[in-house]
Amino acid sequence: MPPRLNPTLRQRRIGAELRKMREAAGLQTVNLSRALGIDRTQVSQMESGKIGVSPERLRSFAAACKCTNMPLIEALESMVQDRSKGWWEEYRGSLPDGILENAELEKRSDGLMMWLLTHMPGPCQTINYASSVFGRVFPPLPRHELEARTAFRMQRKADLRRNPKPLTAFIYESVLWTRFGGTQILKEQLGSLLEDSELPWMTIRVVPFDVETFPGAAENLAYAFGSVPELDTVERELSQGPEYVDAVNELASYRYIFERTESVALSTSNSRDLISKIARDL
Image (cartoon, rainbow, N blue to C red):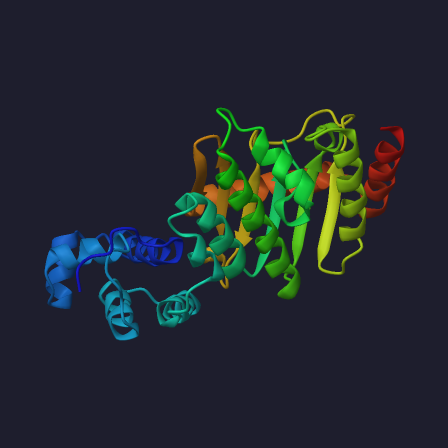
């Protein structure tokens, strides 16, 4: 089969983990290709996600790299055996790949933590609020794309409610005051956020204005937990699209940022009180 032109997020991650194995073993591509009895181009294509990896090839690759991390190997084996297509594939070609990868990361994670500086958590957005957030983009999106992005956002929200997983959202207080679409839409959104905060699998905590400072990141973040810690992923929301981080040291840094954020955030009860007060004061 010819190499894939656009590997999915999952396919690229499998390749990235293979590359990490090889680099940890101190092997060059040419050395590993000889050990596996394949062309060095195939090793490069596997590491970039451009060609598939069978469970047998995965284990041979790990053995050649002297990798003994069995939980990681088994988790990767499960990933390579999963050939299912996600619901987001119906949007491929009509929405940017980065938006589809948001849904893929969300769907395939075991749990999520979020840090929001600019807007409400995606899984909590009402349709009017989501449309207003996408409507702020400059230059303005064509109407059909605005509607497609809003529909996609709502489908992500619905899918997460059908298949819930632990989700913690840390929200900076400024988000609760920012009136995307106007006061009425924000009041509706705050009411919906309060309802979501009562869901058993969702935790909403506000970082208030009166903390001395908040740690680390100055952009929206999503920390997606993998089936093993090595497969965790951080999504950084940038103006040009999402950026995904999986380097071990960077993951450790972001875990620390979230730990510090948790230490300054209000409790869930006090967060609900503040959200309610802001809704009344609007």
